[in-house]
Image 1 (cartoon, one colour):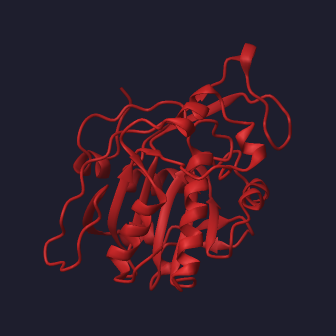
Image 2 (cartoon, one colour):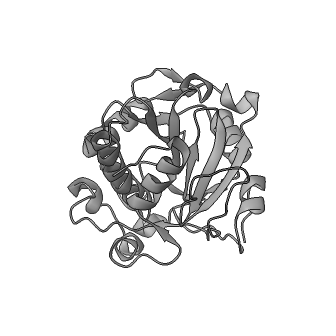
Length: 261
């Protein structure tokens, strides 16, 4: 069993075991004291302020611009961990966020909700790689892909309670990089989490599980071909707990008070 971060230890029900780009169980939705809005039916609703040192942590997006969570105050932030070379979960997460992005646009929330995917593989996920990944999904300006130095990324995910760990790829059957074609030398095991942060900089909702992609063709062809057997199984029959775009949309509505869909 791999170590869990402190935030998830307190919020999630059951043990968390890392698999290659894999996920861990999520607790049931919980009500938030003092809120009159119905809580989401999946994930965990809570209210925890981000420490200033994490809110001000300088990261870099796919365009090379410095991004901090503090700079996004006033917006609702949907934050997910990922890496561009994941073969099991991350392309499915991004596919679901593509549908969330569409729903945000339809609901007139463009500009007030920011999607943010932050890597757990900063050594390989340079801004150039993130740009290539972004283009595969046709991401709008309100959907950013973010990296940083190894210590910066580690500090962010440690505070948010997301565990990840690098492991070597077996040389005999190492997959090839979808962008360069070169054999990969390592993978990154990690929990698969989506967190919604309110305009006040407080964490408000979290889900930890397998993305349920119900829209055919949602994963771009290049990444569809990069999925391994476990990734294809996750795509066709995701194990519980799983989450859908509608779950995230419901969480955004909970935080913003504005219907999403």
